[in-house]
Length: 562
Figure (tube, rainbow, N blue to C red):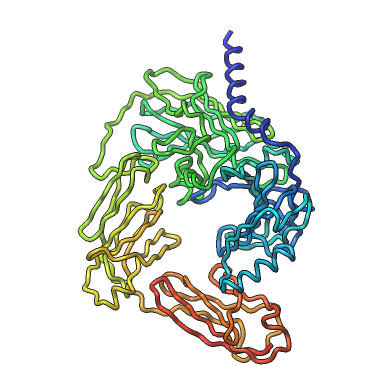
C-alpha cells in the first residue's frame, strides 16, 4: 500500500527537474562543433574553484588547431580576447534565440581574424571585446569559424563550448539539446558526510561515513548522530564512456520515503555561478581538493533554479527511532545510482555556543582590529562564521603594516568585502603613492593598488587570507628569448614577465617606433611575426614600456635581425 505514493513522488520529482529542460530545448538543432566525435573532458555544472563549469570541455586529442565549426546557422555577434578566462572566444547568435560560445581558440577564420587584427592595431590594444551586427559576419551550420587551441585559463588543448539563452545570457546545459555522447555508466559514489546543523557547516565541519558497494548498490552502516539537526553531503563523480570524471547532474535525498532535498544542473548565469561555494564543502575543496556537494541549502546560498525551493535538506530528529535514508544520483541519460543508509539520534546533545564576532548570512558585519577593518555586506557569507581577525608583526622587507589575518582562506565569501589597513610606520608622500595591499591566500596572492581614505588604504577583495601593505619601489621587467641583435628565424618571439610584487598591469611594445601586437600568455608576452616585421627586413629596435600594480614604470630596449 505504500508503494504507489512513493512511485507518484518519484514521478513528480522527475517532472519537476527534467520535463521542462529536455522537452523545451530543440533537439539535434546544434551540431558537434568539431569534426571528431564529441568526448567530454568536463560537463556542465562540474565543480570548479569559485564557479560551476558553464559548458562542455570537448577533447581535441591533445592537439591544437583542429577546425572549429559553427554549431548552427547564425552570425558572429561577439569576439573576446583576454589573458585568462576564455582566451580567444567567439560568440554566434542563432535565429532560434540561443547563442553558442567557443573558447580557448588559437585563431578566428580568415576574414574575422583580419578584422580583429586591424582593430587591435588601430586601438593599439591586444585585449578586445567586440560586438557585431547581424550582417557583418553571417555563418552557416558547419562553417569553419576558428581553430582550436589552449589560450586563456586553459590547462591543456581543448574546446570549451557553451549554449546560452540569447536574451537572459543564462548558460544552459548543452546535453539537454540532444548531442550524442555515449554514456552507459551511472554516477560513482565514494563518500557520505553529515553535518551538525546547530552549528555552521564550517565548524566543526564534515563527519565522514564509509560507503560500501555491493553489485550496483551503495550502502553505509547506520549513522548515529549526537545532534537533533543534521544535513548530508555526497562525494561522487559522473562518468561518460570515455572515462573522465564529470560533475553530478541530478540528486534526490529521501528520508523514510519522503523527498527532503534535490538539485539539478540545467542552467546557471555567470552572475550566480560563484554560489557554487555555498553548494559544496568549500573548506574540503580548497584544502584537500575533494569535491563534496551539500544535500541541503545553506542559509546564504541564493542560487535560483538549482534546488527545489521548499525543501531545505535539513533533517530534524525529534525521536530516537531509526530512519531510512536514500540518496539517488542520475546523469542526464538516466543512468542511476542509489545509496541507502539509516540515521538515528544518540541523545548526546552538546551545548551550542556563539561568538561576538560571528558573521551571519543576510546581516552585514564590520570587524576591527587596532590597525585594520573589514566590512562584509549582508550577502557576503553562505553560513555562519566565527570570524577570527587579528594582527601579527611582520618584518618582511618593504612591508608597511602588520600582517592582518582575515579568518582563513578555507572559508568562502560571495561578495567583495572592503578592507582598510593603517600603516604601522610613517610614510612620506612618495612612499604613499607606491603602497599596495596584498592578500595571501596560501597558494596564490592578489595585489591591488587601493586608495587612501584618511590614514588608511582601502581596497576590495573576494577571498579571505592574510593581508598586508607593501611599499613597492621595484621595477617590472621582461627578459627576451633571444640574444641582443640576434638573427631570428622562428615564427614568434617571447618576452618573459617579471615582478617582485604585484603584476604587470600595462604593457606596450613598439617596433621601430610603431605599436606591435604582443599577446599576453599567462605571465609572458608573445609576438607572432606578421607583415609588420617580415623576414629579410633587417635590423629592428623593440621598445617595451611596462607598468606594475604600484605604478612603477620601466622602459627596456631590445634589438634583433629579421
